[in-house]
Length: 173
Image (cartoon, helix red, strand yellow):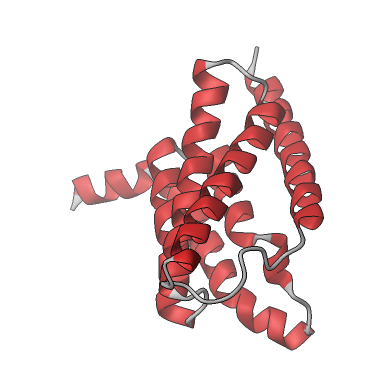
């Protein structure tokens, strides 16, 4: 029992953040419907992943990247399972890209995040094109205008970069 409590205490922050993020994501379809606003266009799964990147650890970030879209699909029915898998891959590429560019290539957080978002999007649309061409997925290749996605990517990277810079500044002696 003591070991379990020690483990719980050790990961308390990560657990609390995960519970809040997952709860918010599960409630989002209902809030979007009640408010009659397409909140999904703000890419809440990516925003949740960025919170995990900022405030939890690498393992948790990858776990959320893969499971949030799949769990959302399973629980709410949106997105459809194959598209959820694509989103999970996109978020995983984003995470891996950010860690690689920021830690290995030493790019600033803002630039590393912007490139990682665009890399994730490129992989997502490449895979989606293949699935659409093979008839495994229905719909159009791009449902949200590219310009909107680019603006959102830039704003997200700016926000992430500012928070990360402030966080690192506060941690340094």
